[in-house]
Length: 109
Length: 174
Image (tube, rainbow over all chains, first blue to last red; front, side, top):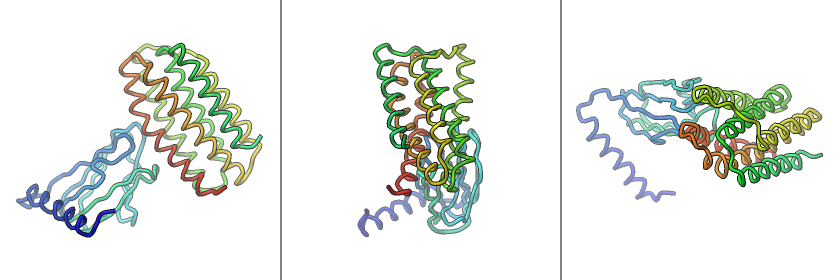
């Protein structure tokens, strides 16, 4: 459990990284690798308008399904991928609908 | 025989088989047979459970087992063909097959929530036993690097299935 100060420091780091990595406001594409039954990175910070691509490198199918149902890739076969543009600011937790132990977080600033 | 007793006996059988296989390390053709059989028995149990399970969660899990273990076996079969290895029956693969047959015979006698519980109990024991076999016998003894790499790659799926089955087991209560 992070302290309030820890949360603030974590959030600040995220903003600092984001500011340096997308200084020109162009749409960037971020990749989340699905491998070994996990999302990597498990937490991804992006700017609104950025593209996020999930690439399934496992032998089994997966999904990228928002816990609040705001997005759902449906079936991503082995070797397949799914992309979406981050349109809504905020933090969204997501899971693989097939494998509930697989959890990820998308943070759109 | 109650379900947890069957599951325990199954786990003991596979562990005993892998322990005896350990004293005479399995060859790659034997490991290939163990991998293919391990996946096949869980596909067979999944097919029974998909039709017979009472709860949606258990039905969905059974469907997932069919999908995932079929995918793993497809890769294993492709690799075996590529490497020109002929899977060779051995005490561990035979014990797996026997345990799988006993499980199905036991499950066929059950209905409703008793079926769900017995299936899930067995899935927990099965995935734990296969993980133990992967870690103690199969991965350490594989000579071919691609065969070893395939088992390392599929190991996390067995871990995820085990956790998934354990969480269903916990939600069913005692």
